[in-house]
Image 1 (spheres, rainbow, N blue to C red):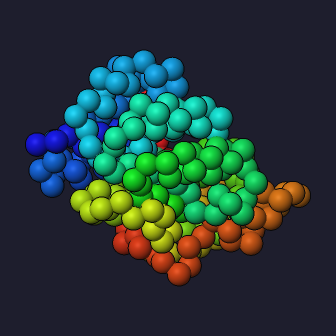
Image 2 (cartoon, rainbow, N blue to C red):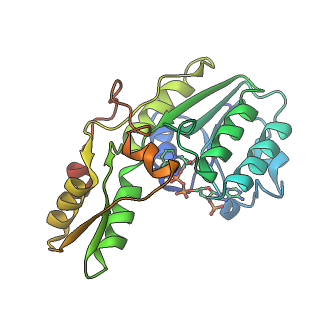
Length: 235
Ligand SMILES: NC(=O)c1ccc[n+]([C@@H]2O[C@H](COP(=O)([O-])OP(=O)(O)OC[C@H]3O[C@@H](n4cnc5c(N)ncnc54)[C@H](OP(=O)(O)O)[C@@H]3O)[C@@H](O)[C@H]2O)c1
């Protein structure tokens, strides 16, 4: 069986994707620094790619520029890859964040190979991490924006379905089943962890915040996720 390579297979999304592909009977190979390959330096890349025809590129260094270098190294090292799948973020062309500029550049690099690009909204895990950090402060600061978080298990199912088919280029963006204000999500979080906290609503000047306030990161037309934030917190 030809192995499917998952870059970032040790990450939040990567672990869910590896579990989903394994459950479907695929031979899955994980690429990360922990498994001996560094996408930024290229160390171990040739060996990791050997024999893999389908590659799911989920690794991120959390720095836009380094993500571009990592993606360029991957694309260059895989001239004959049959299907390169890339997970990206909804709204990256409408919110001028440095990390998003890197994602856009990485999307263009991925497009040099037979590819599928799936843009999603924020993962539940990210929203929970942000809210947990904010909840540690005496007054919980909550940006006055909405979010449509999606569960990585839902994204993993979609990616596994896409990996089973032919390259499709950019497919429709997907988001979670509910769109709520961050304040409502903060209420959900506090209820789930059994805490109470006063909240303060925050607004910021600038194009980045305006993009979020206007909902450029939301996918109202395609709420493909099934697991709500409350269900995620309960699990
Ligand atoms: N988080 C969100 O809300 C969200 C929303 C939409 C799309 N996405 C996208 O989904 C993807 C996965 O995000 P995530 O939150 O699951 O990320 P994550 O948990 O931070 O995982 C990052 C993964 O990348 C690997 N990695 C980091 N640097 C590397 C390097 N130099 N070489 C090889 N591997 C490296 C890490 O493994 P090691 O540390 O072992 O190297 C880890 O497996 C990213 O492309 C992200 O932009 C995220």
